[in-house]
Length: 484
Ligand code: ADP
Image (tube, rainbow, N blue to C red; front, side, top):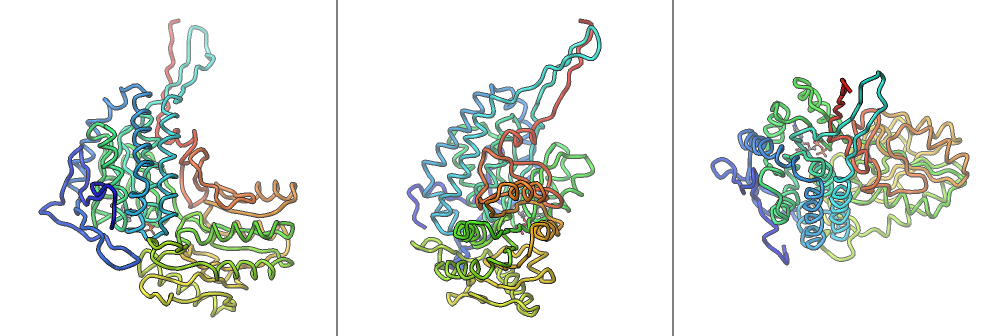
């Protein structure tokens, strides 16, 4: 891997301001999903080092919270600037461990950095309230104070942005953080710590603990009573386990879990825009995002035209190593991911689906998969119920608005939904009818630091980004002042 600044790439964890090896020098391999080659050996930490990181975060928290908000904001801004300055190298590290095309990885670095910028400014706007009293001689004041030590567990699909989305608001309000990135993609997380040290964050304020055993680190995070909040992005299955593990001391929870996003195209939609949107939503990151279109519903009268245009665009995608110029679709993250896409396709075809494009492992071999379109999908197929998390676009049909809303809501998930239509009345009715935390109306790329991201139903708790993202990291304290 060619980096302008090779010091950004290290396999050590960052614990209490100390670059830390695993016990007995234990390491695990980080593998490039495009080549199968080892990118780096990473220190393999466990429960003991996690406890040390939590202790360090606990020690650092009160002094950090006592700093002026403007000082915390300035450090976050410094980290933002360093990330932007080093965006090329950070993108190269990200693509090498995660696989997405380099330009997309660079986009993620800038998107990730934007959370630091947004929350750097919000640090100074954590306002409380003064409430008119309910009794004579009293005054009511509401303070917002940092929750305390935060543990953050993040997935491999956005190795940079899922971390900044959590540390941005946490550090801005005066919390300290211990992060556990996914074992597939620790290097991007560690690179953030390298830059945080350079920016001048005090020891213990931001810690990154990497290890091959998620549960060794996760169990300590959940069991340790010094941790007052757990923020997690990942599967609903693991979210449920963590929620249970956090019940004993009633930790605050932020959960960004799975999705099963419907993408609805009505007969009055701008069809080209809808196809464009479906491409961006479905095939970005090879279909491995939690807000990816998973089920594409197209109104019967425009279905054929939509499928033809979508297929044409899908045929033009270029699969390959994300570090190669012009590649639009990288490998999937691991063999299990490839097997799941294969399983969903086989199931759909067995139940009457029609293969339009793709359908099998790519000729490049390894973890590469052909971008695929299946027409004639139905509610009985696995693709209707489970997140595929891969480059498979199943097209379902529907006849009217009420049916589209009912089909879209027929899932336990409620993260993101999309629809394309022009009629203003229809836009309002459908937007209000969808049981989702994020609704893209003629928009397939809703993610931004300035808006609240999060899910309803089994897609999670809390919101990340925007002023609401601050609320998730503060406690509200009410002072009832008498004798006045
Ligand atoms: P994905 O399907 O995206 O891999 P996961 O929910 O399995 O989603 O993983 C998301 C994050 O949760 C990763 O950092 C992973 O290591 C972590 N994780 C998985 N199992 C546990 C666990 N039992 N305790 C704590 N963290 C876990």
